[in-house]
Image (cartoon, rainbow, N blue to C red; front, top):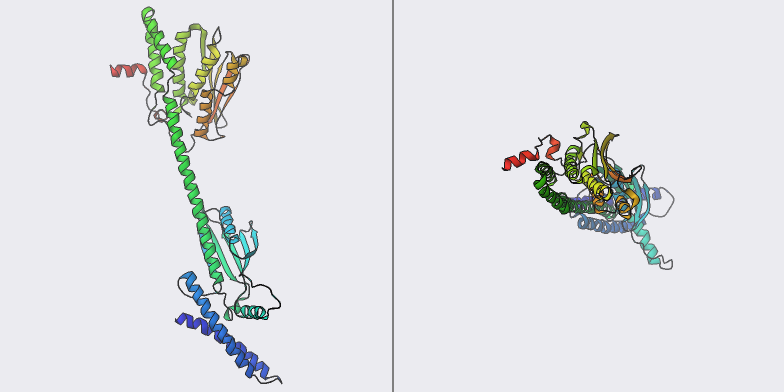
Length: 444
């Protein structure tokens, strides 16, 4: 109650001093008596008290309490926005533009400032109605009609600070005579709420996107694990059938073929803690596969390997090199009557690793070759998709081109460094590699 009385009394005193000064000036001049000034002051006091209590009541309704800060015509807010400066400025600008009766919004993005004006709903402009004109006169005499907003963003480290000033357009001394009826408090609270709402919406959108990304990643990992676990049935059946035939005529070659098959299967079966292999492990897997095919195809298949030893420890997603080798055999050399050669090459330059599988098979000479080398085969699609999932859209790529004078060359290009979030396999942590023969001995 004391705050309300002080608030009303201060304005009554200001208007009383104004009328006293006007009366003294009037009395010093050869003019009629100053008595009318007393009646005018009484009339002004009625308006001051009425509008003062109306202002206090509206402030209490908006803020829920009364204090020196809330009842003031001029409001200042400091709002912390957990965004960088550009995003915080966009949020603040949108919040101000959403205010009712906002006018003349000026955004200065370089200086991170927003200026605007607001005014309340206007009465109809009816010149013939003298009551409207009188009402507007007294409303402008005892209440502020237009307010202004100045908002500034101060950049910070991942958190920006918004300084918000809502005040009447008139000078500060007018606050002794007029009230804003809580409009600036309402504007400050509305802008603060709008900023909070927009930041919350942004956070919910980011969390939803993160959940969706995590779900998609889990589904993709499950799909890739399934692909990793797959061993081509025809290859397995043909190898076992060839080993069965060799046991009758050439047991030594049969034993060698089964050893390569065990090594291949050991490296092809998925591991629960493995998502990234190494170039060395992938080469050993592919070599085991090629050794089996060399026993089956005989002199029709030749293999040449050119991979520096210092590149073998570089991380590489599993089974991609194997897919390229299988494509080279299946679509390049097996359909060719005389067979041919498969080259496995690896080079590092400019923070990139390039691994190439080339052959001198049928290449683009048939519809099947053109279809596979153009990337429409399931195997090549899987390779491209896995590169995108592990390294992103642009960091890694698969290119398939013609190999001169015959055949096809497929090259995987990946960064030398693992992307964030990738998990290295035990092989990348220099775990000892055991041979297939050792594992068979353990089981015996």
